[in-house]
Image (cartoon, rainbow, N blue to C red):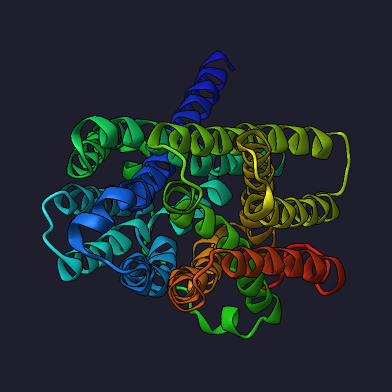
Length: 411
């Protein structure tokens, strides 16, 4: 009995470290993904990029990222997800580091494509691991750790990147961030060794087909709702620093303070949301309806906050609106992947989240280009903010009126 208990404790500790490292990888994911937004005030000027050109470069990441989520989700259900994670992180880390050497728009686009290639492992891989390794009453906390990392990543990136930008320029941002991400591979390779061995010892299963997944209307609805969630989140991540400096006239330290505050609030909100939702599930609250209500709140908070950013004249009130929008993003990110894991179950979580995340990141393809065109042709950020706010509120309406019962589907 003592040996069995010790084995369970060791397994629990191992899974805890894996969850921590997955969350850390997502933090680095968003540090590296958002570096271009932090560098934008100086990069855009030095490289001579228009708002539309910058939007195309940002969008390029999603050209590959969205499509590859489909393939990577299937690979996570078929092969060793722990090895795939290491390869993906290595690719995106090198892409980030090399961005510090670019000389124009085309090289920026190419490296953004490779960044998207590497980062496509993050969410299908994380969902596969969580669905396979964790019980339902830990699902909220695990997904909250990822959602918090999605927020703390931009917070860390904004703070560190802003300091680097002010003292050394934009290129060292990418060198430092890329090198830091490469170091993550070392603890991951050590911590995942027992799980890699278990995976190697398992008999090779027939690869699950996408066909049953793609015939499920709920998956397509989740993809649409994921798109609406991501539009506002990516809008803030990409355009907020540029808007604060170039349009509102804030200094780089002021921009750094506001963005860091907003994303820190997002991270704390995600952790609280995940922990409290897990406690509610343990007490017997139905998980599906609970996560639906939390997501509706998230959409409303995100939409109201984004609208307020465009109209609040003072720095304190604007910062409060940024915090509200980021809090909404936290509630969305914490719960939308958990809902996908409920629908799919452990066996199909990689494929389901791969499809859902691929559809959801269509907003990353079209959103930056739409925003750039609005700014260049209408001469104002107001319409861009209005579009992002309206899409967030539309998401709340769809979750309220159109989402079916959230339960495990027979796929």
